[in-house]
Image (cartoon, rainbow, N blue to C red; front, top):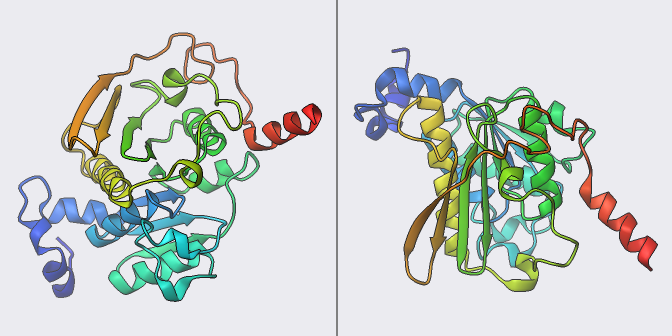
Length: 271
C-alpha cells in the first residue's frame, strides 16, 4: 500500500472495509471517471466520488450557475452564480479533496466531441437532463464499449441503470427512440424535489465505486426505480433487445446523431 499518512487518515473509514482496504483505495485513486452534467444528478455524484478519492474526475457542462439551480445542484454555491458550472464544480471538489485531479470540460457534448471526451476515462456517468444528450451518450458508450451509469429524475421519481453493452442492454433497449420534442416535460416545466436528485446521484456514485472496486452486483439489465412519496424502490428487469439499433449484433445506427439539432430542424420545417 502506497498511501501517505494524510490519505490513510482521510480514507480510514473506507480502508477498514473488507472489500476495499489499501488495494481497493489505490484502485479508486487511479480511477478516471467522466461526469456529463453537473446538475441535480451530477452534483451529488461528483461530490461523493471526489470524497471517495477518485483520482481523475472529468466534469462536462456548458451552462452557467443560476440561482434556481441551487435547490438541488449542491456542488455549486450562491457565490458561484453566473460562473461556468464545470469551473464551479472543479473549485468545490478541489476544496473538498486535493487528491482529485478535476478536468473541467466547459462545453456541450455533441456528436463531434463525445468520443474524444469519453476516451480517456474508465466509466461515464450520465447526469444530463434531456433526451437528445442521453441518447448521444448511450450510443457513444455502446460503440466504444465504455461502461455508462444512467439516471433520470422527474418530480418525485427517479430511475437508474448501468449499461455495459457486451453483457447487458443499453438505454435504447429500454427506449428505442427519443420522444418527440415537448412530449415529456423537463424539470424546468414539471419540477423536481431536490432530495430525489440527491438520492439518484448518490446511487450513481455507488455504481461507479462498485465498478472500480469490482465488488457487488451492478445494475446491468435492471432498472431501479425510486418513488420518493412512498420511500420505496422496485427493480424492473430490462432484457437486451436482439434488434436494438445500437447494441445488437446487427446495429442499424453506426453514426452518432445530434438529436437536438435534428429536433430543431423538424420544428423549423413544421413552422
